[in-house]
Length: 108
Image (tube, rainbow, N blue to C red; front, side, top):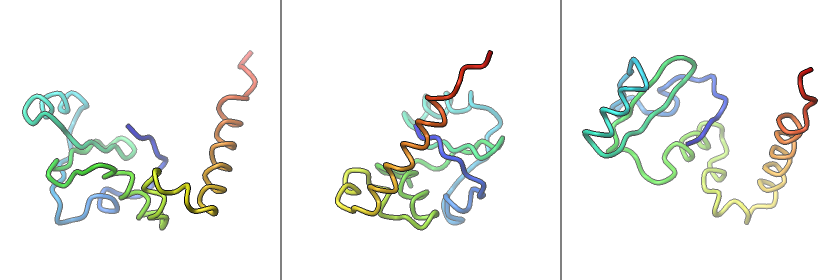
């Protein structure tokens, strides 16, 4: 499961010729899993989508988002350590996220 801030639309990630259906609730995924043994799920804002699992492959969403953001080489975390620029950027992003989420003062 991945969580990624994203303000685009579904066609930015799932191409127009690929089958995607808007679903009304997360419970629909249970039915899809029971029927197919798998599912591809994406939520953008309050809109829930299920994509045809035939288009899925390992790293599917990671590669699609990396390409959308113009950082295609960041989609494969097993290979990105070979690129010094990417590793510096990723390290900085992780540090900033840790500072934001783990070093905050507790609410009094």
